[in-house]
Length: 242
Image 1 (cartoon, rainbow, N blue to C red):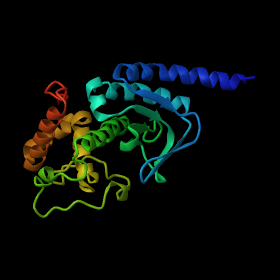
Image 2 (image 1 turned 30 degrees about the vertical axis):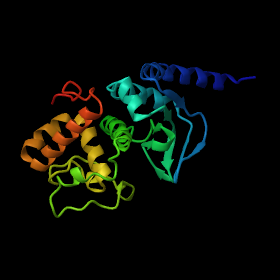
Image 3 (image 1 turned 90 degrees about the vertical axis):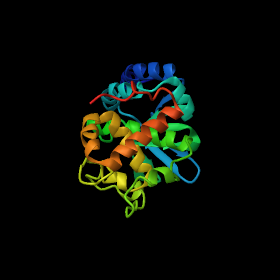
Image 4 (image 1 turned 60 degrees about the vertical axis):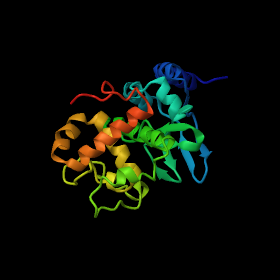
């Protein structure tokens, strides 16, 4: 016999996922809201997480829907995202993550609770991590000589985003020519993903800075050109106005 508390939880969880499922149906991918601990094994890494709390999902759902709905079904098909998973205490190889793009599993994972103190952070994470998936599908994730040639000649990326996890590295700054955050300097793929995300979420900051930063402007031009070639939905109407 199902307890009344469990029944209430199930009903509340169903209510919180209805609108998410409507978006997933429109875009043609599955949705999974984790209701227990799990481990998903991929090639060379594992993704772990646990049950999603109803309050966290209720708060996160409208935000996720607004950002995810910017994309078309055609783009999702090209990204090969077949499933979106929501789970709390999300981690990759034991390192906490707000989201994970699992390329070989054709799955995007999101943690509705991590970073819930900042709408801007959670919004940018959605686009940042999806961009990694798109960048991978375009074959340019970690090997992109055209992009690297735009950087100052003496610049070298760091040792990867997984090695730059201290507080504040994702804060927007105008003090690093060609970059929007310290985190963007950690790796080629993070540089691109940070720019993509902040062009959408923090449009005015990027638009105000670009005319004063030739390297940044050249990256914006290349990124927009490249995205439009990948999918025509990335036209001038896609990018928010400052």
